[in-house]
Image 1 (spheres, one colour):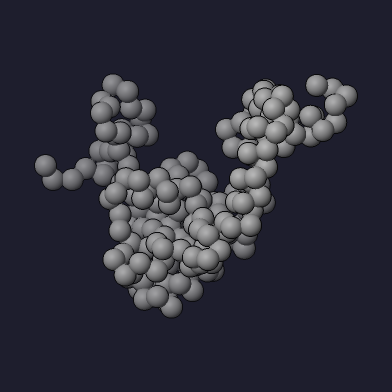
Image 2 (cartoon, one colour):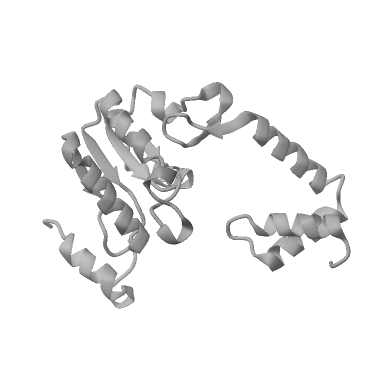
Length: 200
């Protein structure tokens, strides 16, 4: 593909999407270039439509339409307005919603603390979260963050920041995945499952 600047630029752009590497980006670019009026035209149209009609919810950070901002999750009277589930990214909101097990409000931080990537408290939506707790009368904050080092550091930072706010702070339970067994669990997951046990 070297020497075809538009194709190289398209491939490089596609390769930046989550879950798409250099080789997948090249294959996608070739497919779009082969049919610029078909699939390529459709992609241009839907990307343009998404660019003009979609935005991040001003309150929670979830993806919504410009006409519905704040989003339905923030404005629905059927949701528990006293609970706030804090997640790293808008995609996490969609995953939790699909589970059907939570019916409160959300707040996306837009990342997690990561000094290596230059992400400190000022780069995340932490201040907006603290303001919402006061303005909306939140009573419980659920930290639904990753269980890696950066996720744990972010959860610890938030728990400390919330200590003086008179809210209950909890974290998602850790344990064995459904349909799995002890034989397939790593030692950290197994240790957390034992610590997070509950009455049978």
